[in-house]
Image (cartoon, rainbow, N blue to C red; front, side, top):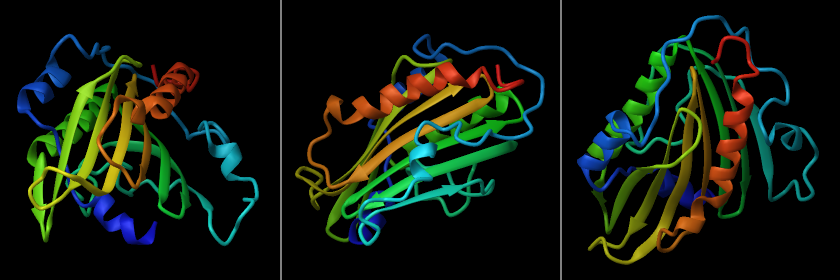
Length: 224
């Protein structure tokens, strides 16, 4: 994982601003109105993989789980490799990650002060997708794209993939994420590691988890 992490996070973005526009304002992503209420925090083991993350691993020299409630960290999917988060008005956040050789997976839940702030967070991600759709570095090209999926109030899948210098052959460095909003909560499910051509099946696990979490989120007071 160590030798791939930098290239996995290196950059990325969507192939086409038209698609990004449809994700934000079209019918593909239904949106709900503003909600009130407060959320004191995220209950222990609320995230789907959190309970597993608290158990001992089988191979401690090779694999590791982490759990963080740090409010100021970046979102798990960060197409333009921003040093500081661009979203605002978070009230709670929990990130669960799993790391093994050549593999990284992450689950993240962010609660915002309002549904509007949560929508802006997704809009910001799409802005990164537009800005970093094709990023050149030494001997490689990183491409990122996004498209809507059905889950929660809004959802999209995002692919980041490294290619050779001509941007043709897939190379080391890939991320596959599903981001879902329900009310004023946003959940992210990401898998990263060695990848080839982007395939629909790359998102199966993340989409399943995103839909499951979306169904849970309204149980948190004030989220929906």
